[in-house]
Length: 255
Length: 323
Image (cartoon, rainbow over all chains, first blue to last red; front, side, top):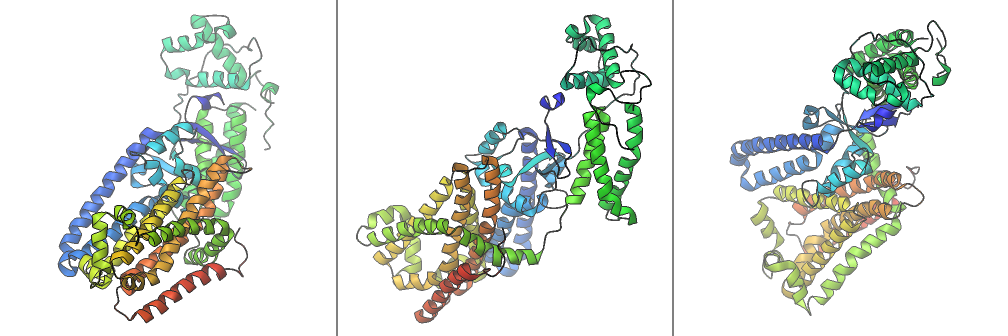
């Protein structure tokens, strides 16, 4: 679809053969999620450190406490993200707060092996500092994957696509056939224009419809009217006809 | 069929799927849950038709989100738990090492040859090893392997107890394993660098002890835990190079696909190496500081090396190949 080129929707084919669209998350929102996680980790370190000083140190001594803290740090540094990403929600607390979720490129949830792989490679993505390698790598892949994502075959996506706002407004225009053959992309653009037009101001609608002047052969309000008429025609070429239009080539649905 | 009719026709199906999913996600599946896969496929079909007919986004997006949700539920797999972990360690790990035996010997050579070279020349030309170790390193070595000091004193002074030492070794050594692996994705350069550096540093320590300390103390200290620890380093470098070599030479696969496959091959190696290094940390924390006669130490150490070799050569041979 033409719309896929202007936004961050990426098609993925599921094992069942259907194409699904994922909205992949870019570097900005991911770095915010990372910052939240970082703050959370620092908070946990502070809390555990204070607890250790007051509870463990008097009993086991200074060196034992340091040892236990090192063990705890080892677990936190290497396995904090693995634990949450391989869990049922597929996201660390920071990622959840930003509405993100790690997914396998097959469309399924992330496996433990994938979570380990993508998080152990963070060391390299971080180099030479502040995730520069990972950032550059994201800019060069169309699904915003850093090195760890590439090896683990994962993507960071928005967990829920925001629902499309579509006001139910009846478009009053006279149904008319387009003056020339339209490609699928063009048909889709027209249909989406009609779907979204009620959300815009009059000036915007007219401005956009005037882009299609070669097709409508009219400008201003008249052009808008003709464009909507063509979109209506695309939806239903003729009134009271049972079969879908041959131009769009859809097979009748088995009922 | 008009778009409105189509929408009306498919509505009961996706509503049913939504209901089933809500039940499952709350952990209370009812009897009709068996219909979930069939309903999912039906909704997938509806989604394809809706996409093809350029149905309004309101509809395609809802179906899209539902299909994604259902796929997540259907594809959720329970991990094999302890059994699969045990299989990974005892079967897949040694199998993976044997499958990459050439790489194993390359990494071994790259690690030990520089180490032996620098250890051999140090007693005659100590300035290289001194430059590598630095004053602090030399002081540390003196305190551990000097004429009248024992590693047990060093552990007691620095860590207080075997357990604290064990914690430090886990944090430090297993962390090094993971970093060696991660460096591999840079065309193998990172792994090679860390591997070579660790080999040279190790050689410098040995050479310097021969030059100014008591070599017997050093050998009785390292002989047991050295087996799993050094092998762990070599194997984690293997895992890194496995990925790095696929970046350089993906063969007949697309580079992206080759990377994913290499990652899957490297994972058992990495986990195995990490477990070996953790075992080494146990030995290093509790066994190596013991003051036992050298004969016992060397017997136990030799046994460790034999065990590691036998494990890598024989474990999991009778099991069917994992791949």
